[in-house]
Length: 395
Ligand code: SF4
Ligand code: SF4
Image (cartoon, rainbow, N blue to C red; front, side, top):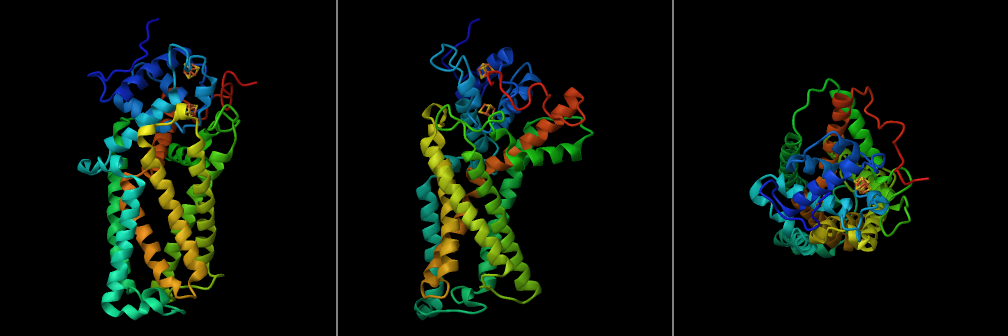
């Protein structure tokens, strides 16, 4: 067998990473040793050729658990040089750029580093401070308590209009990117739309394929643990709880005429506190997991984008919790400006940050569930009992 070890960008593929991914998928399709580890291997076995869209789809199915790197008999220093987690991470990170909307903003993925986000947050905070100072600078040094205290700096309507405009843009851009990605995965005649949707959503919600075939995620070395999966869960569900807190507070404001800040036992505060603490722990865990990750599996070129998103989520939860603790003091004014700045910068960068990996992965899992049903005639789309949950080398 003749297999090149130096990937080249060929006319068949848009990048060297895609060309290398095709080479690896062909090797894996012949080997099939890892077919029980995750959804990537059964999905690649349904194909004989690998166009760019197939590779982008497979890359977004990959959860980067590292199991196939540590299990692989052809991993470096073997001459076949098979490193699936690293190459699929490169293809996956490039795919966010490929499907970005509008395309002209795709280069933002390259520049979406931590400093850009922090400068954005500081700029928004400075705008809010300037806005308040232009009306009455003394509000900054006073203590404000009771319903409506948050709106002394900036009226509620102005705040809502500012955030709603940014949120609406971010949502639209994310939906358009998701649509581009979904279309690229091709058309399937599937009569199992709702059940495939349910299974893909369940697999995404459980992070099923971050289990490394059932024994944990390989991150630092060959000893698998569940830490990365748990930290992902804390961030994922923490984010939704914080979002739910904002939705409940909006309903309170408009339906019940109850204005923030609310007492600690009220629903928006409870949801926000639990979600914020979850995000704080989860992002800290993911940040250190990224630092400790085996460099052989890292996509170095996109490390800045990945780290920036984790740090922005950390700062969002940290400033939100500090605001909760110190809202009865004069520090509340500065903290509110900083918190709003961080949240707005997070929203602005959302469509061009690591955030989209969750959306693409969810869509890839739905497509995979459809494929299982359509191509294997399975009623459930579950992995076969003989291979689910265990790699070939596992005891
Ligand atoms: S051992 Fe796994 S990763 Fe290595 S070539 Fe075989 S299927 Fe691919
Ligand atoms: S999810 Fe894990 S086992 Fe599957 S391809 Fe990615 S790194 Fe390999």
